[in-house]
Image 1 (tube, rainbow, N blue to C red):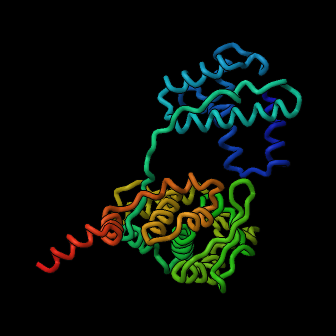
Image 2 (tube, rainbow, N blue to C red; image 1 turned 180 degrees about the vertical axis):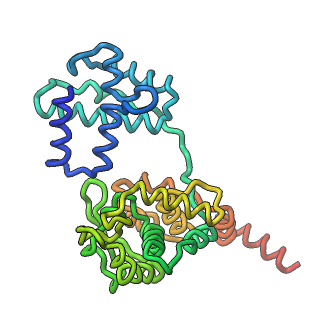
Image 3 (cartoon, rainbow, N blue to C red; image 1 turned 90 degrees about the vertical axis):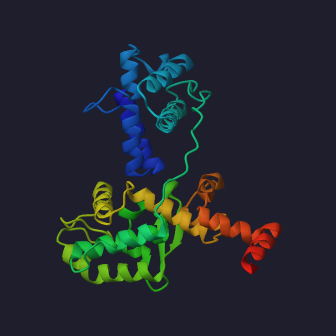
Length: 314
C-alpha cells in the first residue's frame, strides 16, 4: 500500500499540481497520524481490520470505516473530507489499472450540519488591524498581511504562496493561484495597498536575510512565511485586541465575504473574488447581521415602510 500511495502522491504533484496543503491533508486522511491520538487514518483502519490488499476494500469495509470514525467522535465535516480523499485515491487506482472498479464511488458522504461561518464585526476587525507595532519590520509585515487577507479574502495557501510579480500596487490588483490551479484577480483597497507598500519598501528589506527573493511575506529567518506562523500570529493579536473569538486566517476570509454581502455586493461578484467554483459554496455567506436585515426589510417591504414612517411622525 505504501508503494502505491507514494506513486499516488507523485501523480498529485506532477500531473494534478495540487497544493502542499492538499498533499498534507490527503496524507493525514489516508495514512493517518502515528504521533498522537487514536488511529483515524484509512490505512490504519485497514490494518486494524487485517485487510492487507486494496482489492479487498468494498462498500461494507467503507461503511465500517465511517462507523468507526463516528465512534471516535469525528465530526461530519472531517468524515466527509476523509471520504473525499479516499475516493480520489481509488479513482487513481482505477485509472492506473490497479483496480477494476472504485468501491467508494457509491458511498455517500454524511449529511452535513449547516453551520454559519463565524466572522468579526467591523469594530473587531479595526481593533485587530491596529495591534501590530508599525515601528518594527515584523509589525509592518503583519499589518500588511492582515489588511491583505481582509481586503481580498485570500486563502492561507494563497497568502503564503504569494510572489512579488503577482502584486500590482498601481492598479491595486493581485493575481492569485487558487484551488485547482485556477487563476483569478483580486482587488484591494487603499488601506491594504498602503500597508503593503510600507512593508515592501521598508519591513521586507529588513527581513530579507536569507536566499528567498520572490516571496511577498517573509518570516524572521528570511524564508517564506508558513501558515502555522500566520495562525499563531493572528491568535496573539486577537488576544491583545481583546477579541474573545478564536481568530485564524480563514476567519478573516469569512469576514471579508460577510462584510461584502452586508455592504450590498452581488453574490456572484463575491463568488468571483473568493475563487469559488460553485455558487452554492458562496451562498453560506448570505446570512446577514440583524441591523442589516432590519435595514433591508424596512427599505423593501411597503407596509414596513409605512409603519416606520408613522412612528417617526409621532
